[in-house]
Structure formats: structure tokens, C-alpha cells
Image 1 (cartoon, rainbow, N blue to C red):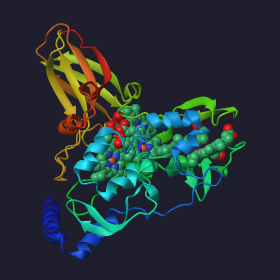
Image 2: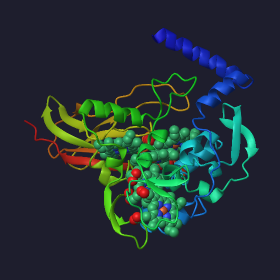
Image 3: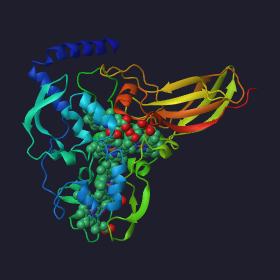
Image 4: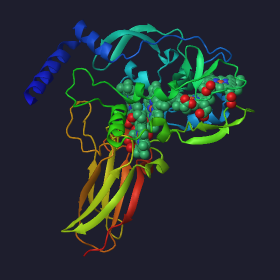
Length: 373
Ligand code: HEC
Ligand code: HEC
Ligand code: HEC
Ligand code: HEC
Ligand code: HEC
């Protein structure tokens, strides 16, 4: 097993070495990194635009929720913006961070170079920089064959075709699940949230989906002047939402013996904790009475980029309960603190992108360690 994997690595290195000139390799990489063929779509009938700004004229509250969401900021938020620029603006990133045809500056028709990843093609005559800045915009999830689809059974007074369906809630997989990168020695895809969620459903028998946990229900008018309805919040809280982090795990118990504090934690998310972005870590700390760090354990998937090799993955699996030991000199007044470090393996990127240090970590749980026996 290990030997055949090594062979694959050697093969990959050789192929990458000649990749710059070998069009068969390029075609393979390109096809693998090109999930959907993008098509120009006519502006929405009755609205005349694909822009969230146009939707916001009527769907004012939803547009404001969405603008505050991570997906509404998927092109402009500083970590992505900085990373994208540093990497030389690879076409591939836009497949998820700004996926509409009009959001692509070039209509790519094949791979130009593998390192850096760049496409060849003509400048896109429909390119719209303002729309690109909208990131994962409304029509990405809602426009299907010219019709605006969501969960309302009897839409009233819409200027555009509207219909009831589940498509928007089923859209998550498209970007929250990747295939394993071609020619890499990774143990699995870099983004694997959808498959982890499937595993969670099998393990627990529960039927909540991404929307159940990430789009809490709200009561509001769906469009200005329309009736108040039960709807789903478009703030889509995730790792950057301190309130959601409180639901991420449960401390089932704690004991203190033999120079260790043992913390028993249960993963309460619907996937691994943390799930996708390999820069993140679940961090458990033992603090002394003055708040000084006595011991720290970080759980994460270690993938030092750009090597694309897995060097260990000790994240909590779906629904897993695990006992974690923190070394303990036995002092009085000790505290246990559990945080999500959002940029654990991305310190340099976070610093360069100007993400304030107080935002790097979000608190999940804090409590006193049991007294020493
Ligand atoms: C990432 C996908 C996604 C994006 C982007 C998105 N929505 Fe939604 N939207 C959903 C889901 C999921 C639902 C709830 C389930 C359903 O109704 O299908 C929903 C529900 C709705 C509804 C029905 C009312 C409600 O609150 O449930 C409207 C109207 C709507 N969205 C409009 C918009 C507008 C306008 C934007 C942009 C400002 C937008 N959506 C952006 C996925 C998305
Ligand atoms: C001129 C006002 C107006 C504009 C502009 C507008 N909508 Fe709507 N939309 C409505 C109204 C009114 C409804 C029905 C609301 C109700 O029944 O409560 C609706 C319903 C919807 C629904 C629900 C469909 C269903 O049956 O579940 C979606 C999704 C939606 N709009 C998305 C959008 C998107 C995306 C845009 C921008 C591209 C947009 N709308 C632009 C007024 C508008
Ligand atoms: C077109 C691609 C696309 C689709 C479809 C999509 N997402 Fe996302 N989503 C993204 C991207 C890209 C980000 C990260 C933006 C950033 O932070 O730079 C993101 C971020 C998120 C986050 C925040 C993650 C964090 O880092 O905290 C959550 C939660 C989320 N999406 C849930 C959903 C749900 C639920 C659906 C389906 C209703 C969905 N997404 C559909 C691309 C998508
Ligand atoms: C049972 C509830 C639940 C379900 C189901 C669920 N999530 Fe989550 N998710 C959470 C909680 C709680 C967090 C916050 C902890 C964290 O950041 O990992 C989270 C975090 C995330 C994040 C932030 C990444 C990170 O750092 O871990 C993303 C992205 C995400 N979820 C996407 C999804 C998608 C996509 C689905 C469906 C395939 C989904 N979630 C299903 C509860 C859920
Ligand atoms: C398959 C879809 C997809 C592609 C392609 C993609 N991303 Fe993302 N990206 C996401 C999702 C989803 C998230 C949200 C975090 C998560 O799932 O852990 C994300 C998060 C990020 C983040 C971290 C944001 C945060 O909140 O911490 C950065 C930085 C980023 N992406 C950069 C890039 C760059 C640069 C590229 C191109 C080289 C790229 N992404 C390609 C889907 C994608």
C-alpha cells in the first residue's frame, strides 16, 4: 500500500516535471479542476440583472443578511482576496468563490501552466467586476432554467418567474465537496464537508442537513410589502460566528488524576470538527489561575501547502466522543479553555491580510478544572 502510494508520488513528480510541455497531462489536470462548464445566462426575466443589488430592491432583509455572510463576502473577504492575489489569481478559485459566467475575467479553454495554475482563453466580453465582487451571489443558488426557486409554495406578486423546490438547499455540495486533487498524494479531498455530513447521518441516524444548522429559521417579509413568512436566515453562520461555535461541541466530563486533566468532548457538528479549511484547529488549553497557558493540544488536519501531503489528521470525526489529556502540574484555580483557531496554520496569511488578532480565535467552551484529589 505505502509502496504503491510512493510510486504514485514519483509518477506525479515526473509528470509535473514534464507537465509544462505535456498537453495530455495538462488536459487531465484541467478536466479534473473544471467541474462545470459555465454558460452565459440571460438576465432574470422581470429583474433584468443577476446582481444581488437588484434583488435587494425588494428582498431587502435577505440581501442584508446575505451581505454579512461569508458567502456574500467570498470574493472580497481579506483571507481569500490576499491568497488569490498571491497565487496569481488562478481561474480555478472562482469556481466556488465567484462562480457565474459573468464573474470570470477570461473564458478559460484549457490549462496554460500547472504552477502557477493558469488558464488560456479569451477575455470574457460579459465580465462584470462588480458582480464578481458579490462572490456567491443569489442566483448561484436560486436560478434554475430561468425560474427563481426556493421553499415558498405560493409566491405572491413576484416580478420574476418563481417556483417552489429544494434546489437551493441541495446546492451546498457543489462547493463544500471537492474531488481529490489530481497528481497529489493526499489521503482525501481538501474540502470534504459534504461526505463527512453523509457519514454523520449514517452514524447518528439524524436527518438535519446543512440548511438546518447553518440557516436558522426567521420570521420576516420575504419581499418589501409582502406577507410575513417563516424563512431561513441568509447570514449562514459558520466558523466566524461566535454564537454558532457554542454548539460545536459538548464537554461530557472532566477528571483530574496522575498529572493530567482529562477532558471528554463530543463533536456536535454535522461533520468533522473542524471540517474543511485545513488551516483551522480545535485547540484545548489548560490555564493557570493567572490565565497563563500550562498545556495545549491542537487537533487539525496537517497539510503543509503547497506540498499537498497529509501529515496526520486528528480532528474529531462526525459524532465522535474523545477523551483528551492536558498535562497538569496540579495547581489551584486551573481553567480549561476550548477554542476554534480559525487561522492556526495560516498565521502569515492572516497577518498579511490584516485579519485582527482578536478575531483569530473563537471561544467554544470554558470552565474550571476539577479540584485536585
Ligand atoms: C448559498 C446558497 C444561497 C444563496 C447565495 C442565497 N440563498 Fe436564498 N435561500 C437559500 C436556501 C437554502 C434557502 C432556504 C431553503 C429553500 O427555501 O429552498 C433560501 C431561501 C430564500 C428565499 C425564500 C424565503 C426564505 O427566507 O427562506 C428567498 C426569497 C431567497 N432565498 C432569496 C435570496 C436572495 C435575494 C439572495 C441574495 C441576496 C439569496 N437568496 C442568496 C440558499 C441561498
Ligand atoms: C420587484 C421586486 C423583486 C425583485 C427585484 C426580485 N424579487 Fe424575488 N420575489 C419578489 C416577490 C414579491 C416574491 C414573492 C414573495 C412572497 O410571496 O412572500 C419573490 C420571490 C422570490 C423567491 C421565492 C421563490 C419561491 O417560490 O420559493 C426567490 C428565491 C426570489 N424571489 C429570488 C430573487 C432573486 C435572486 C432576485 C434577484 C435576481 C429577485 N428575487 C428579485 C419580488 C422581487
Ligand atoms: C458556489 C459555491 C458555494 C455554494 C453553492 C455554497 N457555498 Fe458555502 N461557501 C462557499 C465559499 C467559497 C465559502 C468561503 C468564503 C470565504 O470565507 O472566503 C463558503 C462559506 C460557507 C460557510 C462559512 C464557512 C466558514 O468558514 O465559517 C458556511 C457555513 C457555508 N458556506 C454553508 C453553505 C451552505 C449551507 C450552502 C448550501 C445552502 C452553501 N454553503 C453553498 C461556497 C459555496
Ligand atoms: C448538526 C448541525 C450541523 C450540520 C448538519 C452541518 N453543520 Fe456545518 N457546522 C456546524 C457547527 C456547530 C459549526 C461550527 C464549528 C466549526 O466551525 O467547525 C459548523 C461549521 C461549519 C463550517 C466552518 C468550517 C470549520 O471551520 O469547521 C462549514 C464550512 C460548514 N459547517 C459547512 C457545512 C455544510 C456544507 C454542511 C452540510 C453538508 C454542514 N455544515 C452541516 C453544525 C452543522
Ligand atoms: C471547491 C470549491 C472551492 C475552490 C475551488 C476554492 N475554494 Fe476557497 N473555500 C471554499 C470553501 C467552501 C471555503 C470555506 C471554508 C471551509 O469550507 O473550510 C473556502 C475558504 C477559503 C479560504 C479561507 C477563508 C476563511 O474563512 O478562513 C481561503 C483563504 C480560500 N478559500 C482561498 C482559495 C483560493 C486562493 C482558491 C484557489 C486556489 C480557492 N480558495 C479555491 C471553497 C473553494
